[in-house]
Length: 192
Image (tube, rainbow, N blue to C red; front, side):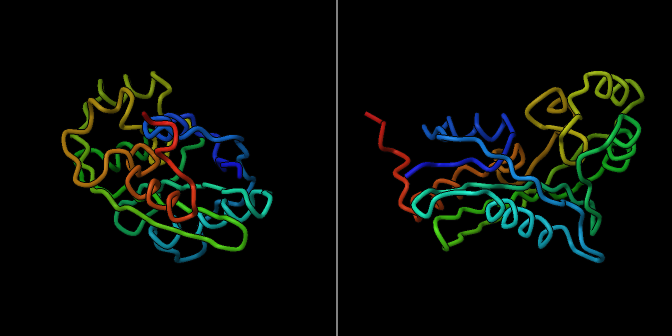
C-alpha cells in the first residue's frame, strides 16, 4: 500500500509530517477548478477535493489523499489570485472583515471515497497602505486561496481565528488522521 498525495502544496507535506506521515509519491492532478455557476463555497470545496482524489491514477490498494482550501467572503469564492493586482483586490475585500476558510479533504482507496470538510472563521485586521503594499511585495500571496497564507507573513494581519489552524493552512490534521485510519493507514506506525 502506497500513500499518494494529490497535491503539490509544500504546506500539506509539512502538515502531514507533523503527524509522522510521509507520502510515498506526490501526484498533483490537473483538473478544472472553475466554480460552477451559482456554486456556493462549501459544496465547491468538497467537489474540488473529490475531483482531485478521483483524478489521480493509483493502484486499487493505494491511498490517494487530496484536499482543497477555499476562502469565502459571504457567497463569494476567492481563489488563487493570478497577479498582484488581483491579490490586492482580494486583500482589500477581506480587510477589517471576517471571512470563512473551508478546507475539504478527500481520501480514495480503490472505489471507496471518504470526505470531510472543516470551516473556520478568520478576521483580517483593517489593512493600512503599508500593510497591503508590504505584504504584496513579499510575494507570499502567490498560489494561496484568498491571496494570503496565515502561516507566513500574513500571520501579522490575522488577529483572530475560530476553528482549525491547520485547516486554515491547508490540511485539517485531526480529520485527515481520522480518514487515513478509516482507510487502513496506520499513522502512528513509526512512533516509539
